[in-house]
Length: 133
Image (cartoon, rainbow, N blue to C red; front, side, top):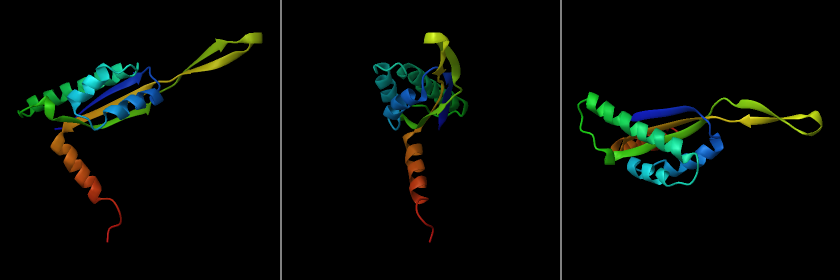
């Protein structure tokens, strides 16, 4: 069962957040959390929180559907970072000038699911490539 979690308007530049998200994409969810816990980058904390939220969402969905839940079966199926709105600020400079400072924000999205869901998604994607004859 797939579960999704999003963090919107996170004050991390999308470029820096994508570096972290690329590390955890395709990993087991437990492994992704442990990697993010010890990653030195500042963007690792909000990404870790989103992964943990997606795991919790999966647990709730499994409880509602009366299905067995095993956290070790979860895999990060999709993980991406979109650009949020940019805050524009001005900084005084020499000779009465002002320069613009862009404070970028990110929307972080993580989708976790069971390993068989990942295998089925890969099979469906592989079958649709190329020309239909």
